[in-house]
Image (tube, rainbow, N blue to C red; front, side, top):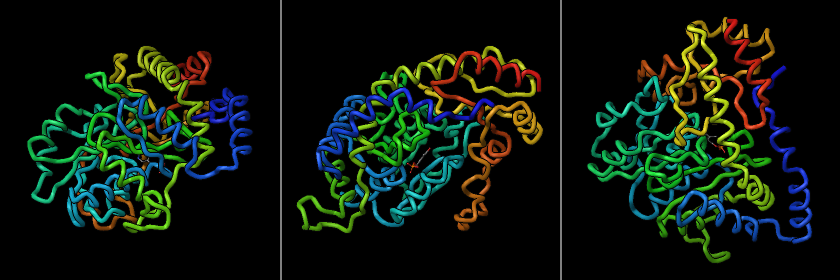
Length: 366
Ligand SMILES: *Cc1c(COP(=O)(O)O)cnc(C)c1O
């Protein structure tokens, strides 16, 4: 069996360092918002090239707190609109709704899985305050076009970078430093994953970083003085310690993912499988390797029979989810088609060349 993602193998590489850091953590007697969180925030902002990083409890809260922060600063108010990808993981949309804003879903591009930038201007109204590109599957969205459009209409650009840690855009800047603010998730399966939940906001905006630090901790900057009604959404000390250790391997892990992607693309030659377009550039870190196939059920049966792990990201379009009844009459033909035909095949930095060869052979036999 080739697992879809072997998280144990990914983390076993750091076992000795994790154990040492756990001992230090235990001995410190300091378990919430201590030195480990501060240290990780500084390492991760340096890594992304941003002025600030604020550690929070998870990726959903990172996105939500950016929006709460901007509302607090007066940049947006309840009922304002945020343009978001119609084929994103639902968390992006939940964050917008939790912040009291209105998600405006935008059609996807079948080749990049990101915004269809030609359609993007058609979603802008007087109430639009932000565009939220999602670097889906690890590929940076078309930020030049998005920034130009945002500039024209005075909109904020908020990246959902939860799948794109370490991806580098054409201008050499990293995901997390391509807009006004970015939300990251450190859910265990992400390219930079904790051993539990975790998230962060990166930004170059001093006032926003300050507001988010307040919101993540009940709305207090000074203990027991509450300026706003905040959340309890703090990055855990021990997760921060683990993340600081794992950050040192992120670049090497991402290049391993890119090499596997290039092998898949060169060697999977089955005409029934539509492969992602990729030429080896650093703007894609392959959080997921997603192919498209007409008869998904039979392809999945073939993978199962041949013991190759697989998942679907994602089987139901957000606007067709029961949880979002107000979006049910919307129609996004491209996004809906993707939801019906995508399959994710194994992708991780700890796969062996033999496993990659086996997966290629199985898929070519389909
Ligand atoms: C994982 C993910 C999130 C949410 O992160 P959590 O840490 O699970 O809350 C948000 N957006 C995208 C695109 C994701 O992949």
